[in-house]
Image (cartoon, rainbow, N blue to C red; front, side, top):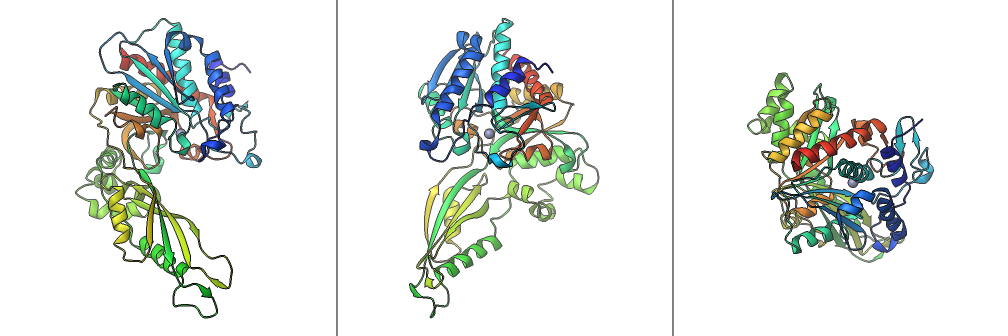
Length: 439
Ligand SMILES: [Zn+2]
């Protein structure tokens, strides 16, 4: 079987073990350097014609100067990947194996496919002699999976310091997916226009020390458990934000019966639909700030009272709430604890959908895919693009791939792979989009 050069390059890209970790000391930076060398060798025209600035040693920023006056567009992607559990894969996770019409490996749909898709597209446009009116930047993070402190944050600072602003940013995020999960017959393309933020809080509960044979009414662990139960039983209020309202309206217009009517009139009928939406984990997370208690620690011996018990809560903050609101809210439960903020992030702004860029994105999606319903949506997970709010107002998160809800489960999971058909859609989409948006 003969594969295209693009597919072979994706396979090669997947062979670098660019695994990110919560501690920068655990990064195997040689693998990251080798990956960047690989880009240099594989895309000679990009490296000849575009200006390359390396941010913080491992984040390449490519600049393709346009002839016109419009503000540039920025394409984002990341080349770090999450770790693998090697034993549970059916192919070696860093083999880039091509089989069954698929390219297998960690990073194949998150997010080396975007990097290779973009580089292939730009290389091809250059070889055809294309030159854009609007300037183009490509910026690749190397620690997106561990919050982007060294990659995206630094790149965004570089742009800010140099007064570089963008009309549009395009990052990974939504995809084209089958509509049946939403009860719609046609496919749905989701473009992320906002992201919830992540905050982590640590709570410490104090109790009596001593022998467990004469315990107090409640130990530190008992107090902690009561607090957890209280918070879980009284979740934060539900609210409709503009991207969710717009999505419900668009999806609802493709649905018959009462549910379609209720979705189209979500604001007026919110009291009637919120219970159903709260009963589904995914839709619940679209409508409120959520709290997940994720780490606990307490005693050290079965027969000794633990004087301290600790729990960490991972909070996903919805637009309209701030980290301070959430801290106050935790305190309002009136349990006795010490609270420490481990990580605080504000939710992102909401990008408008009435821009020319959004229209062009929509039309390219319609052309490359089978005319799916296109809708904005709120991302409950994070991407690097959230760091760029100060240099761009129109940030769109969309990866031109058709992934069913089952395919989406492959992200961060065993046997991650992309179909060649999907990767070819990416190679079709980016040049088309670049030509339309850059002139
Ligand atoms: Zn990603």
